[in-house]
Length: 224
Image 1 (cartoon, rainbow, N blue to C red):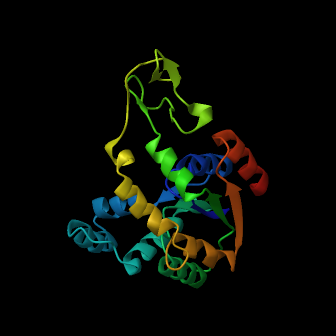
Image 2 (spheres, helix red, strand yellow):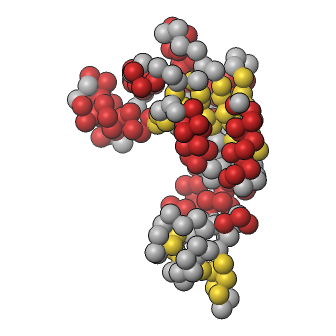
């Protein structure tokens, strides 16, 4: 089962991707990890990528796509893979599709977690971190994991810790808007890439509004 997964920041894409990965027992492949592995191993592609990364520039597609192909050809991908974080735009979608075709690798499904831009932004900005355990889920904009209240203040819904904090990047509206600007762009951005695949392969659209379990259950039914 070879799958691409898409979803805006704040949609729960990472969580759902991990669930899908476990369901089908396939590697969860992320471009960031691929870059780090190639650089640490000193591969030719890794050396080329490092020059761009060190200069603060984006790694060109003619380096990224071959890295991805090399990864999905490894033995642990024999039964399939889940690719997350690529492609991010229409040009990358076209490059990946052509490369897969040339390598005779089929793409079985594309998963799109659908969530409107405003809700995605609220979910990012609503994240709260528990001082006792950052893995305790708290989000002031998601009813299922909304922090409890004590003396008029939010406290961790799991352990009751009163020290809930936020990540600086979660509160950077400019950065969030920039990332979402790329994702929701239907002309050349990520949604343009999703629409590209809709003309070529089965795309499973999953409503990202419900809770994690509801979204997971819905996705599992589509994939069964």
